[in-house]
Length: 355
Image (cartoon, rainbow, N blue to C red; front, top):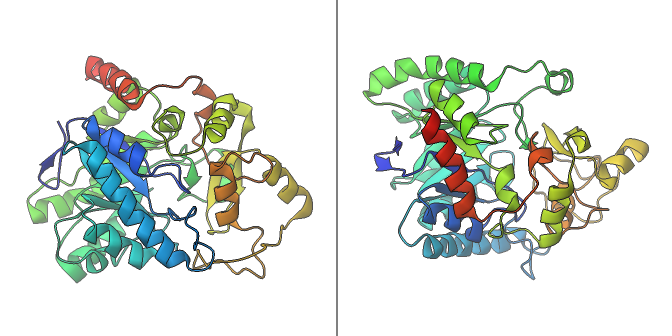
């Protein structure tokens, strides 16, 4: 039974945050109700609010708080509820503060190093978990937190190159498949954390992510030094997933050869399905945004190749022609729907047999 931030986690599974609107309160709460850590994505959770395009900050914060409350109701006091916040978003500070104020158990931050996360989260008891892709990143962050805040993370998520969405690797590494394997990155991060664990007299648990498909994968991560794994793509094919049925059908129909490495307006490469949007971008180079909410700090609407917010909203609604469908490398292996409790029973049953 993993322990993070002094709290027991019944299952060694974190459900990865997926935006826009793919992992909200229903999915996160259902995972927590089984004893795992369910995660809500703070990437535009208010996309369906009537004032979203007029005042996206108000719509998103309102929706985020409502989704946290929904997840907690569904969880019924079991498991943990986390919120994934991307550092690259313009609403990163407000999202962290809102998640902490709304009673999230953990804030997980990726798409950049959350150097100021302890300051943003305040003095409450919310657990803070950076998402890193290298031992160097873990060391840099821990050194900064140690000097500036006299603390270290409650836990970390190590995201390897096989994950979906925005990836902390160079485009060339992903295209040439030369990025370090996940198990090696676990070893690097564990070595980087060791001096800080010694200084603070406690473990800093790590969860491995990126290409984790089976209980055997979870067991391999645990043998390499992780205390569990983060799984995202497989949770799409559950009735409890917050995305539309059309979105799920598209993902279930995906083949291994449909996956592409794409360049996101966030400034990071990512992994997604070869949808018509990706093909049009390849041909035209740019699809001028019709409107902008300044969602990404590094995005210039005058030059961005496309509006990632609109593309992800179209995806979650099941619009194959216009959507951007982020996915992990194993999407082609996802062939059937399972309820969350069935999926977790499968993963943890296999894991227990191998550890």
